[in-house]
Image (cartoon, rainbow, N blue to C red):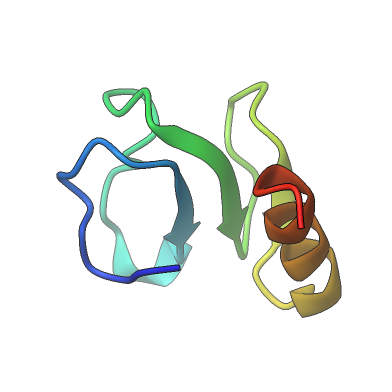
Length: 66
């Protein structure tokens, strides 16, 4: 797991906070496999509450087949 390589072609989980008022990255990045946010996104990607650490960890574990 790495942080800060948003322009690299690797699987990513987008973390988005509405208060930051930045656009979502997933519409333009096919390497984003899920999103975690304090709101909802208009996507069919798996979505998690930014505070649901257990669900996010479970998804990552399952995604990399640990």
